[in-house]
Each structure stands twice: as C-alpha cells, then as structure tokens.
Length: 239
Image 1: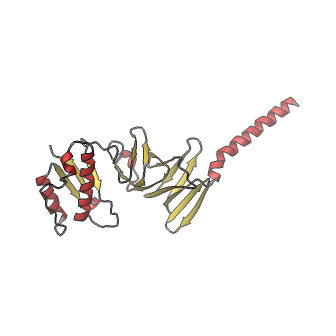
Image 2 (image 1 turned 60 degrees about the vertical axis):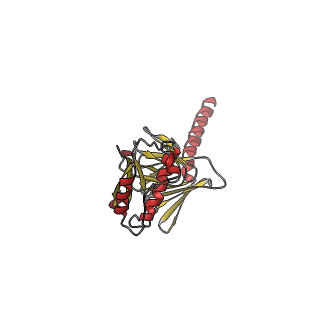
Image 3 (image 1 turned 120 degrees about the horizontal axis):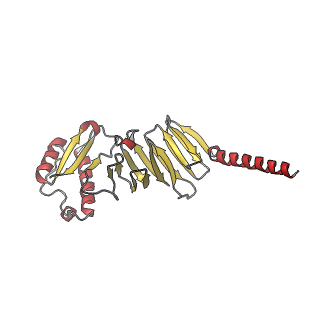
C-alpha cells in the first residue's frame, strides 16, 4: 500500500510539473489587427509585432523568441514594470515597455541595425551588456551608439529618424547634427559646441544636402559620409 502511494505521489508530481511547464504558453493569447499581431501574456503585458512574425515562449529560460518582423512594441498592462526578455535575430533584449525597429534580421553579426524608437531597452549577449534609450541605435556586437553608452573616440552613426521620408532633407540633417553635437558636448570633450553648434557655417535648406555637408566638413572637425541608399549620414572625427 505504501509503495502504491509512493508511485501515485511520483505520478502526481510529474503531472503537476508538466502542467506548470505548459502553463505560460496557455496564457499567451494572440489577436490579429490588420497588418499587426498582438500577443498578450497573463494579462500583464502585450507584445505587438508584424503580421508575418512568429512569437514563442520558452519556459526553461523564460524568454520570448521572435521570428521575422521589423517593428516590435512591448506594452505593460495594469501598471506592470517588471522587465521581460525576448530574443530577436540572436540578440536578447530586456525591457518593460518600448518600441523597437529592426531594419535587418542579422543584428548579431553586425550587419543589422536596431533602433529604439521609444523606451529603454537593455541588450544582453556575449559581447554587450548595456542599455539604450530612445533615439539610440545599435549596429551589432561591436558598435553601440546611444545617449548613455556612446564614446566619442568611436565611429558614430546618426541616421535619419524620419522613416516616412524617401530621402534625407537638409532640415533632417540639422536636427541630427544638433543631437550629435549635444551628445558629444555632454562628455565634456568639446564644450564650445554647447553655445556654437554650427560655428561660422551657414545652412540653407534650399541647397542640396551634399553641398551643405561639404561646407560642414570644410569648417568643422568632423567628416560626413552621406549614403543616399541607406538614407544615413556617418560622422567621424577628422585625424
């Protein structure tokens, strides 16, 4: 009788354990609205991804795994602020609420670009363990640009955030330069930029962008490489 009871106890524990492992997936519900899919988890937060994307949950590492999709929105419900971790393109992203844009799927190799549109995201993998705030960009395992972690000695890439525009405009470049120089000045390396961002540089928005960039290069300490196909400007300090 005692042996039968022990076998029953072992069986019951196995059933309970199996049920616990399957529980999180049971709470992961999905709804589709137009071109977007919204996943809700245990009424605590929801994740919005592109319609063609796939989202799964692994109970063992307690992470969500995303396949496909270039736009991700994580939204806490009922005041939830505990962070969640999901893996996209081999990169683990941890956040409680954020909007993220992935321009290429192969981020982990350094060929992709991840943009934090809103919120704060902590990036965790073998090479990087840091946070990026809104407006920050990440270009793979070795290049990290953000309001917090950018180092002036590194190559800096500030890209046009106006995704609706088919090409970068001069006024877009001006906004990016203000952001770039303000970040540079915040590290105390070039304090004069705080009061004179465009020293002796006249900018006419009616001029072609390449003309403005050439004038900026002649007057300043930085080199500007404009890539129309990527709608981006790469800024590096002159030797």
